[in-house]
Length: 326
Image (tube, rainbow, N blue to C red):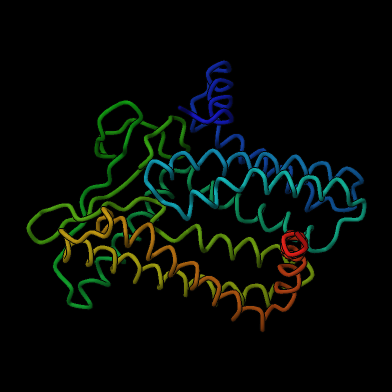
């Protein structure tokens, strides 16, 4: 049974004649637009209302993605996406209650705006989407062969159509400059073959590490009080490091999946374990270390993050205190 919010959004899409992918893209871009207005028009008395609407639309988009992560059994992303809507509502309330927007909240508006817009521009332009997937697959192949871990080759770029068989992009008659039709979950992908021609994994846009990189683009780009030189220096440290770490991540997943095809832990096969559990945990830890390294260069980033999460700590302390007193 579909959860009620997702069902309501899909019904609205049917009523206005818009497919689910286009509707979700519309929701996130509306959210980014309102957050952008709140960020760039700080002195406008209505900016807090723009931002409040932006948070709700943005949270709704990420919440709608949780159904997909439930299907593929990715507990980390299920938790993160499912909590997006209540978290965004809390931020919207915080926005409305503050007539004078705190600098940290103003930064958070810009952080999401600077992250969402470039990510979905790449997602919505098939040429950019496919180029990123191809680069990710070729980088992984180069890493594996350099390490002497096998002989691999990359298949043709494919497109997973919604309700129709997958076909090579060369046979696809869709618009390659702007995505105008709903695709299946995989979207564009390339298959990764071993020396015997067996498919090991397939690479999609989510394998590129773009999500991790774009978080730092938003967080650093929104530091409006910091000079462009320092922000550029921070990005030059973060982005190449994430890209290289993602190459190791992908290579490790491919090698382990091929080398231990019969391995399982409590019914979880090697690919699902490395992709949904081990790699996610390592990636989150690596991002945490990256943030700590950047705090020395950009102390303003640390200040804003602490001011954003302090209310969460305050609530946790109140709950703990209540439990102790009872």
